[in-house]
Length: 117
Length: 117
Image (cartoon, rainbow over all chains, first blue to last red; front, top):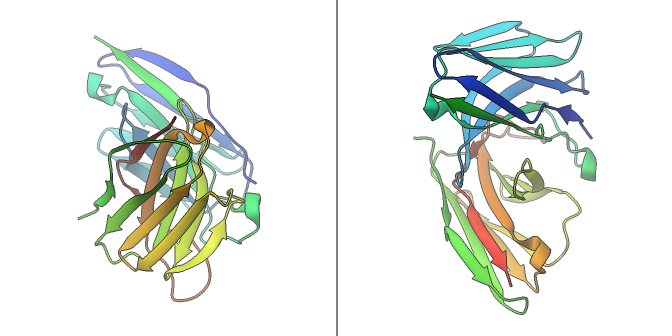
């Protein structure tokens, strides 16, 4: 199945920018999502990018995609304490096959973002 | 409305009990998913239903039995669970095509926190 790597922890000061990175292995990934999970909660869809785009901006969020290096990043501008959470990248395909462990619906390991005042 | 609801919010059960988790969405989505999430880990896919038919089973033990009685509801029946099955169980839904297997943007519920004693 897909192998998706993220670093585990990031600490930033309130008001600074945060950059969260993700690398993936399946070059056929078509939709690449970012989800946020606050403690004890479900996953909240933050944003996504199609594989035919290099960049997408959505208010404080900027997603960058480098397809050649299979690298995805999420930049959060003016980071707030409410941004403290775990962030997961989630590259997917439009079409998935029922091949057991190769279903290609694999989340990144997640990065914990801690915002200090 | 992008709401997926899950009940119960918390569940404690013994290893000989039979219980069910419920998930509901009214977004007209025809694909629904069950994920299992252990503490400090990413969600792991268990099952995918597309048009009320099971399309993916990620080699999940038979003590977990999914059911999709209609297009809005998804159940997960639990029987003879083990303590290591304690986790957050997340339900998600997405659009689905008329034919074939594919995944679109998934919207997650808040999860059921399951503890097996």
